[in-house]
Length: 318
Length: 30
Image 1 (cartoon, each protein chain N blue to C red):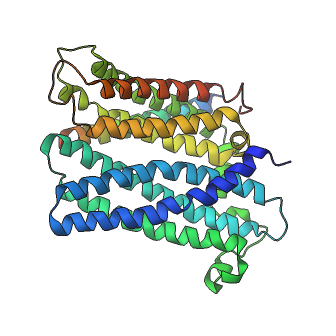
Image 2: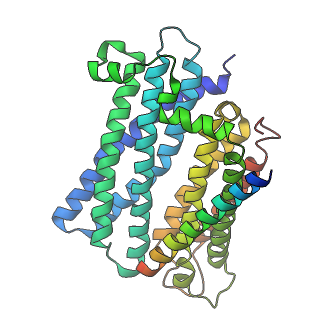
Image 3: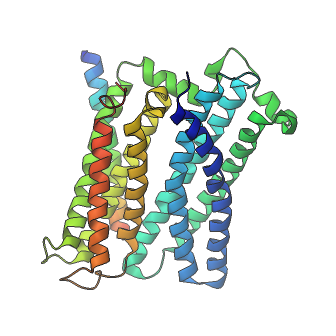
């Protein structure tokens, strides 16, 4: 029986799925405007928006799988249409996360140079246009699940193939995660290392803001952030593999909700830590808002750790 | 179990090497 939470997640998917498409149209537009006008402020705003969109794309994707689990039990819904939508959505999600990562690196660099590297801005532009194209296709295919009247011949043909779910990449990934004896434990090991990397770096950076290690300039601690971001990226990939493999053990699990909510907060904090102005020049004391941000960040990461660890106990993951 | 342990270790090592290389490149770029 579908749970209340799964119903809400399906609704959440319908609400949030506009962010990656509409949001990246606006962000790419602002980025192009910044390039045309040679305006660093506009470029920065676009890069920050793209990073934020990449963060929000995570719950869009997760809630999509929840919606799929729910719709599966309803009549008149094509399983293949959903699997095709899922495949394209995964491609769009992946490119979107790459765009967000490169946008973040450009922001991190420009903190020191006052100007985003042209090569990175070009890469972000290219990646976000690709992500937008894939997201637009995913959005169309998603709409067709409930609206067969708009289904084109092209997608009807592509979605054919009842009885062979292995034709879809996401289905193959999910089956491999569950059937392979080593894939799940390997992803768990890597997930733990990624968390250690991410939390270790953010602990150092946030403690510095709170006044520990005052003799170290904040600009030096700031150099550690890419390592934390890489740990975050590793965990995004491995976490997605778990979710694609066994969505049912997460979508109606309370600690999983909390984990995703606190991940969003932690993502916003990461952006703040990368670009914030105050405290950067001051070697001694951070402002009160910066300290509040640092405490929030540490709390959010501890909450992510706790909720993740409790998935098998409060929730029902293995 | 032996094969599984090798596969898991191999994946962990490969991921750590990738992280080290990307981290080094990003760090040097800034």
